[in-house]
Image 1: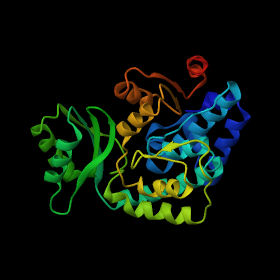
Image 2: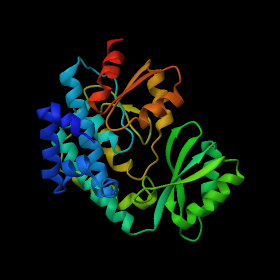
Image 3: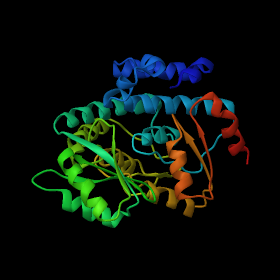
Image 4: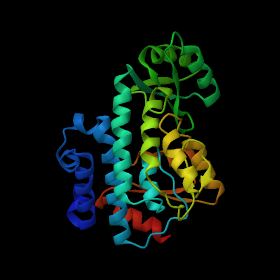
Length: 296
């Protein structure tokens, strides 16, 4: 991840060095060399996603005319989206995400939890299934509303096992366990949200240069107080990505560029807004496609 960006961009190289310095972790080396098991651990995975996204943004801005009308970021991707909107700089983003990642890793140690994808079930019946499965002090809840028929639940493992049965009984086609570090975007992450709030208290955020659609409410804002509040509450709140994309479409957005590693978000856009024009940019191989989209 990010190796070819670093090879062509001094700014991308600087960002990875900054991530290493701020986190005290070998972000650049693990991105380039692995192992995958380390790369996917919570404390290093989140800074890695953000720094690779910021490096991609820097390369893209240096390579082609780029101006976003509105931005949004999925989960930890909000940190890179805030940099794109000039709410804070890359150093602040990486420092904050390091706090978030470490606090979430600590919160995960307090519960035997995980996440699962529920395929083929709508939000309301899945929410009822979560209530049925939440028993004896163990809870499960909707964590990500990613695309129609593709929702993610998060919680304690015993509650997830009950949810698997309840969701199938409610009509889900499949319930697929996810290989993640813990029950993200659930009530079990509230201690991590407190840590993010404390870190935000020491910062002054700027009004966003363009509107941001935030995860927890799918509302549009440029207000720095609202944007700061979002970074705390999104840690334990569901990512309302379907509504986010629908709001963007209602604003007239018909071109979507995913900036960062992989193309998962681009796939969610295609599933939710099949008529939208979509591209991803996370490596130099993606540059022609991204440029073609931006030239339209």
